[in-house]
Amino acid sequence: MGRRSKRDCRDVSGILLLDKPEGLSSNQALQQAKRLFKACKAGHTGSLDPIATGLLPLCFGEATKVSQFMLDADKRYRVSIRLGQETDTYDCEGEIVAEQPVDVTRRQLERALKAFVGEIDQIPPMYSAIKQQGQALYHLARQGVTVERQPRRVTLYSIVLLDFEGDTAVIEVDCSKGTYVRSLAHDLGQSLGCGAHVSALRRLGVGPFDIAEAVTFEALEAMDDAGREGALEPVDRALPDLAEVRISRLATPYLLQGQPVSARLGGEHGLVRLYDEDGRFLGVGEALDDGRVAPKRLMVRVDAPAAAGGKS
Image 1 (cartoon, rainbow, N blue to C red):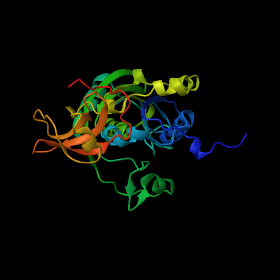
Image 2 (image 1 turned 45 degrees about the vertical axis):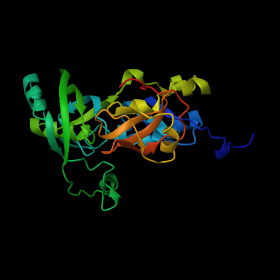
Image 3 (image 1 turned 180 degrees about the vertical axis):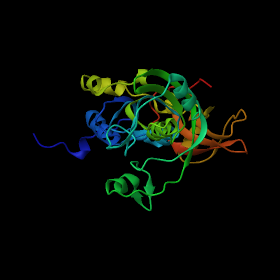
Image 4 (image 1 turned 60 degrees about the horizontal axis):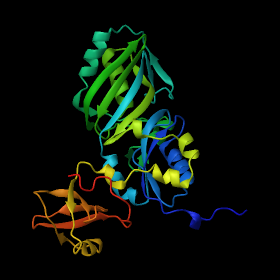
């Protein structure tokens, strides 16, 4: 048997909610899933560190056109934080750079956590993929170089202390895009005066998606091709915050050719979800002030059933 050619890949479209195992980078998980699906085109929606497990939405085919919406979505995590040790990576994979005794009460911990809720300026860790002067920070960090990082404004909507025993705290964090949970753990340790790092991390939610919906590699490997495709979520499930607009049967061909078309707008502005009269998802459009809708990101395939058609 010869090697599989690139022409043997399949035109697969949809969103896979993967429960990423520990030890794989997001890209390694993506490549493994891509091989399982024999997919021609795929992308992930934001990195999870190798030590992290949990929800990693992967976009196949036409779904890659809406991946930015999941990159921009809020996230939810369960985090184990080890107090008393500070590491260079802010997690358990790094080298310990400082140790302090832990003399912290639950009340002190809750008070310290409460101070991080809301909009805060967060300094990203050196071990991150953020680029500075064209080079990723983690490349510089591995060379022993530390550079000044600009703070980033992020929002922590809630932090709930789930457990605190000995030197380990377990919290659940609901936060905006761009939040570094490792920086949160590091900053918490600084505020408590004992140092801290992330010892375990699990992502529980991304935008409208929840870990309860995710599938493991083991489950995917046990499926045939049809079963795997059945595990994919419709593309428009990634867009629950966009209003729905129906395009008439007459106007649909013109929209698909890239032309703005008239539509019944109920006061919608900005980006909207577009459906034809049969409820098939057409893509993302922009509601114009003159009562028309202009196409922005159209789906090439419109033959799949929509997830939210008819549910305004």
